[in-house]
Length: 390
Image (cartoon, rainbow, N blue to C red; front, side, top):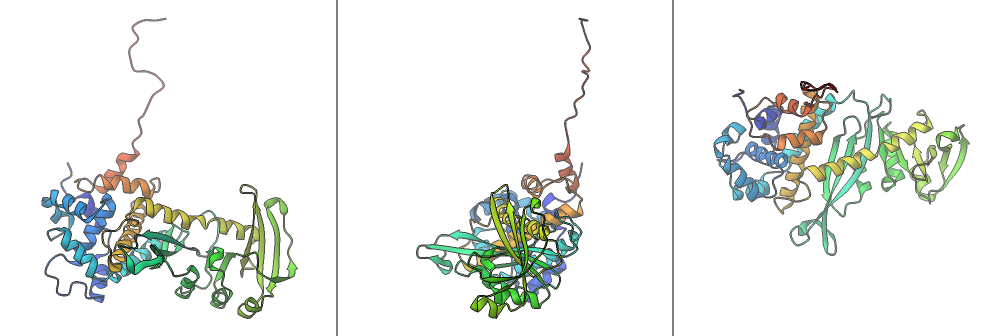
């Protein structure tokens, strides 16, 4: 019988705690704190994410029921609803944002060699945003419409491993394209975006930074064709052109040549027109890369369904951002555990489901996941003795 650490404690051992302490010290997180440190807060909120707690009272009730095991979870203070609410209200959310970035850098190194369906040496990112609706009376600071509040989760997703490399949380009024101003372009990388990010001034800045982009064009984009490349229409391609923009503003903001690829999708019976500054990658790969953009949509759908980022434990801006960043940390932590324990046959959803019911168990972490791999072996021949011959 295993008599060592609890499953939750073993999971938290994958966290680089020295880096967490650096993040806390950077923002004086534990200043004037006598009990319930930033680590206690992080562990409580991570536990709430992993066990699907509905509210602060739910967290308090669950942890008080397991009071004798809290020390073994790594939590050194007593848990109360008011203490956790005050911590979420007052502890700087940037502590957990910085720590999430630490985990992201670890995860990206682990998934750097993963295949995402297209053989390319370059790093490929998908950029998109998702709106999280809020109640205006409870979250007046996040006013979005006349009778609606919302925050936006802007995410730059590394397609290798579906790890978010950049996240920005803003109020719902911030337009998606403004996030391009916060990005630090990586030379040689490919950025895939929907047409909501079509801003030629910002795209030209990416071009000048030696980064590549693939973006859907709008119908009213004015251009002049310079050269048409040879294509195979049986693949779905309709054109591969080198163009120059002719609009008054677009020509001013993007004076260089640009590539236009048109593709017809038989399954959806739709035509797509893409713009890119990459003239080396084959035209069909341009279309296939844009198809991979759906991974960022799946990322938003996944975290909204399986993590607590649609219902919040606090109503202040600091509490909301704290909860979202800790949720992102939990997502990345599970991805790190999956890769380090070589559980490629298990999905993140399966791992989360297993963890949600085994956090207080004293069993080796690897053994917990091995149980889900057991298959019932059936034989074609029965071992029952035959009493009669027919």
